[in-house]
Image 1 (tube, one colour):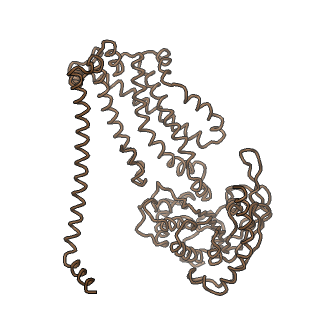
Image 2 (cartoon, helix red, strand yellow):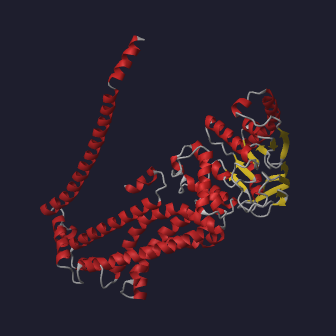
Image 3 (cartoon, helix red, strand yellow):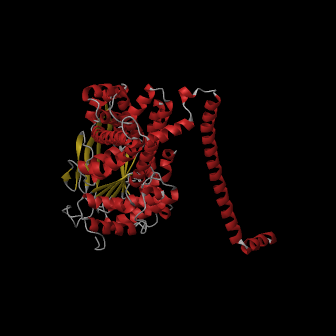
Length: 284
Length: 294
C-alpha cells in the first residue's frame, strides 16, 4: 500500500492489510415463500477469494448470485454452511464491506458531496474531516466541481462514478458489486471498467463482482466462478492468468490468451444458460 | 464544392443575426402563448359569472334558490362591514381557521408518526392493516355528531373532526412512502454500519417525505371541510355557523359569500404548503411536481 491513499477508518484493526480473504463453504440459502413453501436459492456453494483478489461470479439469470453476495455482506444469514471474512465467521453485518448495485443506490435528496460523505459519517467521522475526504474522492473519480449537484442532475456514468466513490471512500476490505455496470451503454461501461481497475489497483480490496458479461468478467478478474442454474452451486472455477496491470479493457479483448480463456469459460457456461432458458420458457 | 463554399461564406457573414432572430422569434412565440392563455382564462370567468348574473336577472334561473353574483358581492360587503349576529366576520373566520389549522397539525402529526411506525414494522402492519381499511371505509364525517354530543359546542370537537379527516390522508401516504423506500439504499447504509435509527433518519423518513408532502395539499382541504361540517352540526361561532344560519333564512347569497371567503383562505394555505414543498423537496427533478401546480 502506497502512502498516498486515505487511511482506513479507525474501527478496522488491520489498517495495513488490503483486502480480506473471503471463504464461503457449503453455503446453502433457502427462502420461505409467502405460501409457506421453501425455495432453495443456492445449494452447497464453496468459493474462496484470496485477499486482494478480483473474483467474478457468472451464471444464468436467477441462479443465486445476488443471494451469495447478501450472505457475504451479512445482510442475510445462511440456512446452512458458513462465510468467513479475514478468518472471522460472518455473524451480523460484516465490517469493512461496501456494496455497489446495478441501480445506483444514491440518496436522491442529498447532494453529490453528501452522498459520498455517508460512509465516513456513518462510521462517526467528524463532519469537516469527512467533507475533506469526500472532496478528495470526488476529485479522484473526476467529478471535482460537481459537489452541490443532485443525483438526478447527473448522467448515468457520472452517477456511477459517485456510487463508486461512495463505495470506496471507507477503503473497504471487501467490495461487493452486483452487476454495477449492467445498465450502462457500451462506451460508458468500458470507461467505468478502466476506472474501477485503476482504483482497485490503488486500494486492493477483495472484490466479488457479479456480471452477465463474460468479456467483462475475464477482462477484470483474477478468478471467474461459474454457477449452475437454479438452485445455484459452483460449476467451475477459472483462474485468469492475464498479466496485471491489465491496461485498457477494450484492447485486452483482442489478445489471444483472452480469447482462449473466454472460449473455455463460455463452453462451461453455455449449458447452464441453455438449461435456465429452457426452464423459464417451459414455465411460461 | 462551390455551393458548399458559397453557403459557408453566407453563414459566416451574419451568424449572429440569424441566431438573435431565432431567439427573438421564440420569445415572441412564448409571449403570444401566455397572452392567449390569459385571455382564455378571463373570457371563461366572465362567461361563467356573467352568464349566472344574466340568467338570474332575466329570470331563467330563480335567484331565490341559486343566488346572484351581484347580491353575493353585496352580502360579502355586508359581512365585512356590518358583521353577523355572532360577532364580526374576522372573529368567526378566526375561529374556523384556528380549528382547521389545529386539526390539520394534530392529524398530520399523528398520521406521520403512525404511518412511519406501521410502515416500517411488517408484523404490526399485517396485524393492524385490515382494521385500518375498515375504519377508512366508514363515513368518518358522521363522527362529527358524536364528537359534538360528547364534547359540546366548543372548539375541541371541530379540531377533532378535522384531525380525523386529515389523519387518514396523511397516514396512508406516510405508510406507503415508507414501504416504497429503495431497498438497495437501505442495504447500502446497513452494510456501511448504520443503526436502525440512522437508517430511519437518513433513508426512510426523507424518502417518505415526498409522499407525505404531496398528501398535505389534499389534507388541508379536508381540515377545512371537517371544521365547517362540525360547525354546521353545532357551534357558537364560525363560518359554518353563519352558513347554517343563512340556510335557515333562505339566504343563498350569504352561503356563497362564505364559500368565497373559505376558498381564499384555502388558496392562501395551499401557497404556504407549496412553499414548504419547494423548500423540502428542492432535490427533486423539476417536472415531477408539475401536476401539482394545476
